[in-house]
Image (cartoon, rainbow, N blue to C red):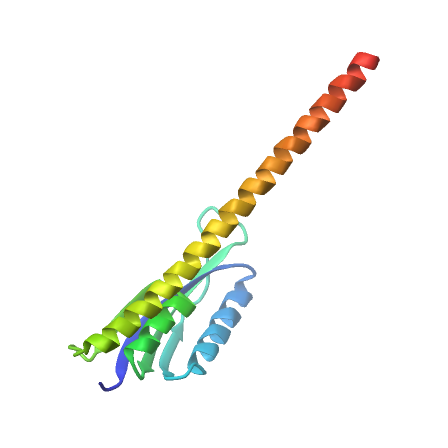
Amino acid sequence: MGKLQVSIILEILGRPKEHLTESLNALIDKMNTEKGTRVKEKTIHEPVLVKDSKDLFTTFSEVFLELDSLEEYFEIMFRYMPSHIELINPEEIALQNSDLNQLASKLMQRLHDYDALAKKALMENDILLKRLNESSSEKVKESKGKKKKN
């Protein structure tokens, strides 16, 4: 399979305004150092103020990439989470079962990793809420005990 030509859009939200452009530039520069990935063209749009906000800005960048394989295509999706990705060229891709199985296995591993992180975060949140409830119950009991003494 030949090189893949891909268009992506990266969006960012934050403050200060100048930081958004710097961050997008740094992100795109990092992307250009990835194995099998070359940034061919980039356009970073001027940050704009978010509606109903005093100091929160948003902007986006259009980036055209040349990738060595579908593996890099999926890596870009997971590593950089573009808001949009479009495979421009080639129009058709022929895959062998072994190649598709390898991509599917990597995809499933990544999804399992994210699932484990989400479950861990939920479990830690439950533990913290339980401790907070126990602590607040003790404080209420202490406060009631002090009121009865007075």
